[in-house]
Length: 279
Image (cartoon, rainbow, N blue to C red):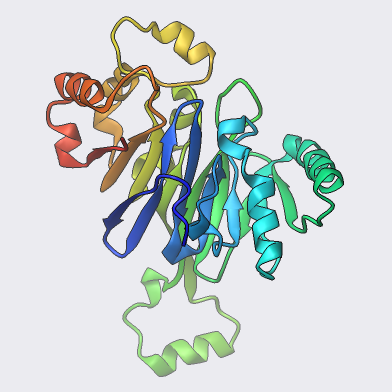
């Protein structure tokens, strides 16, 4: 398999996070166990088998490889993929695919589904994805992947199996839906987008942006352009309940050593060891 793009891999429990992200360069992520990915700034060959993608916004470093991905799946005789994206972007992406089709003379079959904040996507009986509003310079969304289970209501937990069966046969709803946020993806956003979705702070795994880390970069300007600064993370350190927090989308203004030095100065314990810098 050709290695045409950098991919970092991190295993956490029974889930694997794969991808790469640098601001204004390229962002792409996937969770192979869930058969889904986030953003298509570049399309590594190894990601081609993932058939469901959630795009955060239409800046090129997050969407440029969408036609390439669709074309490769057609070329390999795979089923057309399903790509969820902000509803404001559907017409534009359809025009983009039409232009590429005209130039390439090859079909680009895919299902584009626009989402609004609060929309819900059922991927399976257990997995549900919700779209959440984020704050960027263009229409944008974050996503939370939930594990959904049916559990017996507390008032029926002491009953015998036949008693529960009889209640069900009589039409009584004995169970209720319980959801747990498993993976959250912020995309590009100012802190308001993160704060607007409390589930992101509770998800087992959070992938969020930390575009700027240097003290001389002004937060007001950064927020205006829909991004976050290291200081925003410091201000919210007590809110992160996540088991793993991935800080990504770092600016190319910094090299890895500079990022590590500045982050460890402000967050010396790296959120009790839960913070991973995706460099």
